[in-house]
Length: 349
Image (cartoon, rainbow, N blue to C red; front, side, top):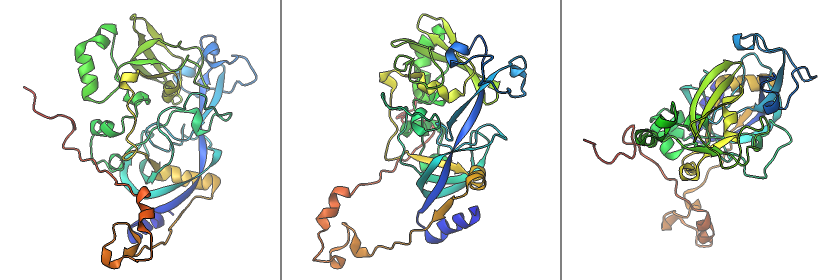
């Protein structure tokens, strides 16, 4: 029960172990003559399913179903399309460190548990592959700091430590090639800690979902992303020569496996500060109802004052080798943000 878990966190003043099932979120992509080569589908093939009852799908006779792992690059566990059945995708154990009753996710869920996760951020390394498209290594991933989920600082400040540069949400939009290459645009992109210049990821072959979009060495700017319906968006890019490339309707975060920041703008998340996710209460309930086996455990372990490397000499045990603990002693850094522009050193005239 959610209230029991929250009470345990407050009562014990220590983290809990959270065990929960993982799941896939499903999307229906329009398979037409214009998109079949990109999606490697057949408009009248056996994989066709009925499309969502939304305006842009009105004349589309075939949609193909594709599954994505049940998190997004904003560090949120997400239920996918409303009313869509959850599908199992394994299980996971994490550290439950707190909660927020006011954080609102990109899917509109209010409140959730904040967890510390062990997953990497960014995109899968070259050569890493998954046969199951719902597996974590078949998608981009992102995380945030505790302070972000507690709404303690701005999105600009957050991108100073957890930039999530591979997420389309962290890419700076510009209207045309002149605007994209203007000095003022570059200054604005840096000021808000967003990526301006992109390139084709690999040889355009890293995505398991869409193919043949770009080639190695091609450079791009991000122009726009317009909602299509069914949880999909149509994204348009601008090439260095000024021509435009508009992609077929996709889940927006699929772009992370097609385009990537140029090396000069590829900044990693700070591993000391980032790595946190949120499990919305609504998703927590849905996972429990669909799969069960979702529970939090209090590990009742208490350490004496003499258990630590930095214990006062008067409480230490002379027969204990405290030096053995030193290689595993780390300092948890804390970042303070003085305002919405954390790196602004002086007032500009």
